[in-house]
Each structure stands twice: as C-alpha cells, then as structure tokens.
Length: 446
Image (cartoon, rainbow, N blue to C red; front, side, top):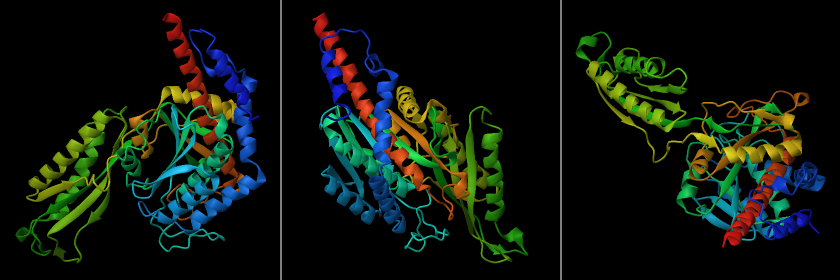
C-alpha cells in the first residue's frame, strides 16, 4: 500500500460528513502531514536516484543549447519520460515538452523547469565542462531539468495515489525569449489550476528555501533607439549634426524618469547598457544606436515608463536637431510581467517546506528588480516561484547566475526533487478534500 493510500480513505470519509470548512489539516495532524514531505525527501535522497539525477544534469551541462534550440535537451527529456512510461506532448513552443502523471482528470497542477543555456564561454575547469564553444549553462537550468525529471520518476512510482493530474512543464527560452508565453499560447496549459517553479540560489544555504507572497520580481522590457544626425569632420562640427551629443543628452534625461518622475517607494529602473556609434577619432557619425532595459513592479508604472522612454528619446533628439526611432522588439523579446506569488499557494508552500525542512529553513525572499518569465504562467493562473538554496561553504564560493564561473552544488538536487513532488501531491490532495466537502454541502442543501 502506498504511503498516501490511507489519505485517500479520508477523502471517502468526507462524503459522509458535512463540515462547513475543510483543509488537509482537518484530517492530518502535523506529524502525519510531515510524513508526506519527509517520505518524498527520503525517496529523493536514495543513492541510485541521486546518481541518476546528477548524471542527467551533467549530460545536459555538457551540451548546452540556446533558447528555442534545445532539441537535444528535449530529446533527452522525452527519452527519459518514455523509459518511465509517462505520456507527454511534443513539440510545444518549438522544443518544449509537457508530461502528464496521474488520473488525467482535474485538478491539474503544473511543475515547471526551464531548459535553455546562455551564450557565453564556460571558465569552470571540471570534467563535465561545456563541450559547445560559446555556450554554457550558467543559470542552473540544467539542474532545473534534472530535478523535474527526478520528481517525475518519484511521482510516476506513486501515480496511483495522486488525486488529480500533475503536468511536467519543460519550457524553452526563459532567457529573454519568452518561452513561457509561447507555451501558454499553445493552449496546452489552459486547464491548469496552479503552477510551481523553482530556481537554484547561490546566495542561500543548502537545505533552505527563500520565498514570499505577492510581487517578488519586476516586470521588464528592452528598448533600442536609433538617433540619426548628419556626419562630418570632427574639426568642423558646425557643418554636422552630432548624434553622439544627442544620445548622451538622452541617456542623462532617461535617468530623470526614475529620480524625478517616480515615487521613491515605487521601485523602477531604466538602464542604458548599449551605445554604438562612430568608428574613427575624427569623424562625427551619421547615427548612434543605444539600447537598454526598463523595469517596474506594477503594470501601471511599467506602461507609464514605456511611454516616457519614447517621449524622452524622440523629443531630446529633436532638441539636438536629430531624428530618433524607438523599437521595443516585443516579437523577439516580449515584455515580462511582474512575477507575483499567489497568497494561498504561499501558505501551501510554507506548510510543505516547513514540514520537510523546518520552518526556520524558510527564508524571506525580498523583491528584486530581476525578471523571470515564470511570470507569464503566474499571470494566467495561480503561481508560486521560490529559490532553492545550494551554498555550502566547504565547497568554495558559488558565483551568481550568468557568470562564466557559475557552478551548481549537486547536493541540493534531492531537495528540489522532493519539493516538486510534495507540493504537487499535497496540492492535489487538499484540492480533492475541499472539492468533496463542497459537493457534500451542496448535496445536503438539496
């Protein structure tokens, strides 16, 4: 008998009860509830499963692929799902894969892992270093895929105990390509009730998680502007219209959008990180290209910031006798919404993680101006995104994401596997218990 079989008995018992309100705690004491999460952690730490997860992660790490090019990564995922006997749909959003475990019926809870790598050269000298020049898994997505596959293996073993359906979402192109948005547009996630996602963290100790309710990461967008003037010799600037001077004034004015037009308590960022113009010391160029990013913590602020960026660039250019065009390139780089963690899912996460790791191991995640395309999922239906600690001081310094020296502490992988499995299983169970009570209440009234 599976370790959740006894729980199913309680859901049957619910049909004979008419309790006005019901949650999982109505039937399970803390010790019994903890057993679910602890059992999953013990399963995830089995040596044979751990070695398999590590092997998967290293294979992916050696063969990094950029957004919407994750064909070999996707093939590996599908091969492993085939071996487990898990049904899946492919392709979704070019290279994405969505697997299904459970009854095939509601409720539907999703677990997400991003697959893409970054266009950078790995500088970590180790046995499983990237074999592809100029490409590297420098943000932990290889670990994310491995952990979700590990959770899939455990959940498939316990599939007869699931009180609904778990969707395994292997997503392409998180790094700027908006892969989550394209997966939503495919319609395959239309019936999802909730989704959970995680990211390994080089700032939190192993065995801890960092999370909070509400907005946790900013909405973001990119912009590029071309400022056109009139080229000429640097010795006779009066015969030219200098786009470099115009671009310089524009950059300074853009900083005023935050420092002089924004409520200091409403976090916003405008950063110009690209400036291209001219190729000689004594020639004023015909044009200059600048580009950057803007971020905010609300739709209203984000929309206002976008409008003012266009106005500042075009009008400041005109002051300097130049013309300017602004392109946000949303087709290739869609705007990312604010990442907002659902309040009810926050409580669910705290219960599960607290029982598995200890309530003192749940750290508060402070909002950051970074962005994450998990936000597309969390905007479409209730979502929850958290950080998985992996710092072990005995293993040296762990660099931040997008560093050529980025490393993953593989000892953290079982925690991610267990949290994936526990969050999904207990969500389905609690959802089923509540649904049973609602049905019984309606029956009693009739």
